[in-house]
Amino acid sequence: MADDAQVLVIQHESSVGPGNLASWLNERDIPWQLVEARDARYPDRDDWRAIVVLGSEESAYDESLDWLRAEKEYLRPLVEAGVPMLGLCFGAQLLALLTGGEVHRAQQAIRGWTEVDADEDVLGGRWLAWHGDEIVPPPAATVLARSATCVEAFTVGPHLGLQFHPEVTEEIVEDWTADDFGTAELQPEADRVRAGNAENLGTATEGASRIYERFFAPVLTPAA
Image (cartoon, rainbow, N blue to C red; front, side):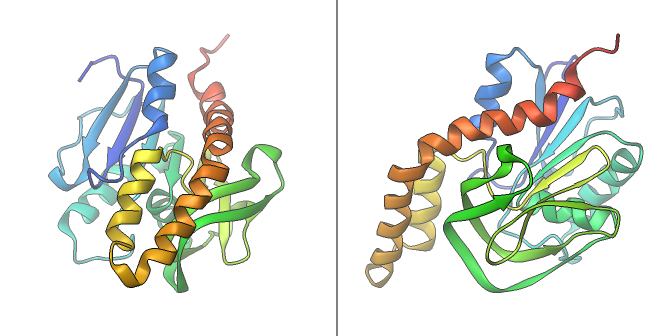
């Protein structure tokens, strides 16, 4: 990867990739580097302009995972030093834990398009949610968005955590739908998600660009 990368993107599974975020960064010629968390090999540098932590099928509080402990050890000093972190789903949960919040098993897993009410227009609307855990934000957090089931967005200093997935593409959602609702008895659930894709994915993709602009513009703008 390029030594001039400004943004570090941490991925945990190949099925939960950067999606439309990669396109957004590339279209703006913003150099970025992808690291596979399960390899636990992080660049020896602390001058990132921003960090993005993607989703995962694991739980952010699972202390049995060596790679997750290594990820927390790498991220903690960067977060504490104020390197802005954008956490998406699992990444938001990890951000909460690193800044004094909690994460626990949700009463029900959420799989599908979810209405999000937000204090900022850019965060409101219908977003894809796909998680079984939920966040208790840290005391220093400002909660910016909620759904009927959980906190959906919060900030802590320069960091932004989103419980939903703005980065998803049609291919990503189809992969998750096939994995989780691939049996005949779950076909109605698969149909529900696919119908939501047809109705919401285009608008959500446009909205994702506005979220990235909100987060990255102050981070990547050179100081005067």
